[in-house]
Amino acid sequence: MGRKISASGMTLCVLLGAVFLAGTGLRVGAQSGVRLSIASEQPEEKPAKPPTELPPPRSLENAPIANGEGIPDAMPISFLVALRLSQTRNLDIAQGQEVVNQFQANYSRALVSWLPNFNIGSTYSYHQGNTQKTEGNIIKANKDSLFVGGGPTLVYSVTDMIYTPLVARQTTLASRAGMQRVTQETVQTVAGAYFNLLRARRRIARVEETLEFLTSNQLAAARAKSKGLLPLVRDFVELKAKNALKSELERVRVEVLKRQEELRAGIQDLRLASAELARLLRLDPEVLLWPVEDFRYPLALPGDQWSTMQVPELINVALANRPELAENQALVQAALRRVQAARARPFLPNMIVSYNWGDFGGAPDINTVTVNGKSVTFFSASGQINHFNTRSDFDASLIWKLQNLGLGDLANMREAAALHRQTQFRQMQVQERIVAEIVQAQESVEGWRQRLEITARSLFDAKGNPTGPVFQALRLNFDRIFNDPDNSRPLEVLDSIRGLNDLLDSYGQAATEYERARFRLLIALGLPAQQIIGPEGPPPPPRESPLPIIRLDQPQ
Image (cartoon, rainbow, N blue to C red; front, side, top):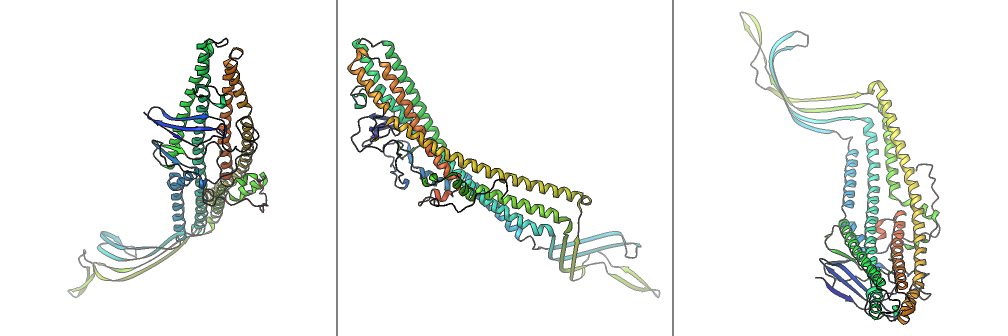
C-alpha cells in the first residue's frame, strides 16, 4: 500500500496556473502509482500576476530542492541539474569526445608522416646449386651470407606528404565542431524529456482538480460552498428533487470513471517520461524522478532576453554560432584539399629512400692450391659465416606514376570534385535549415506565449484571481443547482466542469510548449551548452547586431 503525504502551505494561484491549492498529496505505491490530490479554495494570500503578464523569470539556481522526505521511491530533480548531469553521464557526449580523440590522433600521425621508419634486424641467405656469374656463365655453388644491422627507410608519396596533414587538420576541426553539435543535441533531448515529465505532472494535477469538482464531499467556496457534483446529485436523487434524474447521476458517474482513467494515463505518462529521462542521464529507470520546480508556472529559463530580438538579428547570430556550420565548413575545406591532391598527384613523384648499415659476412672462400705444378682453385665448404665486417647501403628512387595511362587520374579528379560540390550543397542545406529553425523557434515562442495569455484570461480576472469566465460559470452553476435544484439541471454543471478541464489542459500544454519553444530557440541560436547551463547563463544579446546577413546562395 502506498503512503499519503501532504505539503501544507501550497496555495495554487494558477492551477497549472489556474486554481488555488489548500494541500497537495502524493501517493506512490506498487499498484496505485502516483496520486496527486488538489483541493480548491478561495485565495487568502497575495494575488497572482495579471493574466496578460506572464510570471517574471525566477532564478533556477535558487529553485527549492525537495529533500524527498515523504515521497517514497522518488528522486527530486530540477531542470538545471538534469542538464548538468547530461554533460557528465550521457553516453552520446562520451562517444563524441572519443571521436575527437580519434581524429586528433589521426592529425598527429599525419604531421609526422614525413619522418622515416627505422628498421633493425638480420638477414640470412643460403644458396645451393646452380647460379649465374656476372659474365653470364652458369656455375654450381653453395653459399651462405648473413647481414645484421638496420637503418631508416622512407617510402612516401610527395602528394600525400603535402596534403594529408591539411586534410587531417580540417577533419579534426570538423570533429571538434561535431562534438559541440552532439552536446547541444543531447542537451536539447534531455530538456525535451524533462518538459515531458513536467507535462505529465501538470496533467495529473489537472485531472485531480477536475475530480475534486466531481467527487469531493467537502464544501468549497469555488463550488458556491457545495459538495462535488457527484455527491450533490446523489443527494438530490435520494431526496427526489424535481429535476434530479437517476440517468443524470449515472452520467456523472461515467464522467468520474473517465477522469479516473485519464488520471491513470497521466500516471503512466509520468512513469514513462521519468524512465526516459533516467535513461538519458544513466540513472535507475525504476526510480521516479520528481520535478521540484513550481509546475503551475512556465519555467524561468536562462537567456530569455534572446526571444525579444528580431528574426534577422537572430539569424545572424545563429549563422555565426551554430556548430553544424563550422563542422560542414571544415568538411568543405577537407574536400577541397582532396581535389588539390588529386590534381597534383600525376605531377609529383613517389619517393623511396633507404639506408642500411651493419655487419655482413658469408662463405665459401675461394682456395687455390698447386697440384703437379698447376694452380687449382676450389671453394671451401659452405655452412660457415666468414669475414664478418661492416657494410652500408644507400638507395634513393623517384617514381612518377600515371594511373591507367592518366585516365585513372582524371577519374580521381572528377570524383574528388564531385565530393567537394556535395559538401558545398550540404553547407547550403544546413544554412537554410538553420534559418528555417530560427523562424520556427521564434514563431513558436510568440505563438505559445500568446496562447498561454489567452488561456490565462479565461481562468483569471485582471488581478490574477481564479475568477475568470470558466470559474464564474462553474460557481454560478453550482450556486444555481444548490439553491434552486427544482429549476436547474446537473448536466449544466457537468458541462462547466468539462470546460474547466479542457482549459486547464490547454493551459498545461501551452505552459509546456512555451518552455520547449524558448529552450529550442537558445539551441537554434547555437549558444554553447556550457553557457546555457552554467551559473552565469548565456551572454545577453547585443544591442545592435554587428554581423552581416550571410547569403544562402553562396557556400561559406
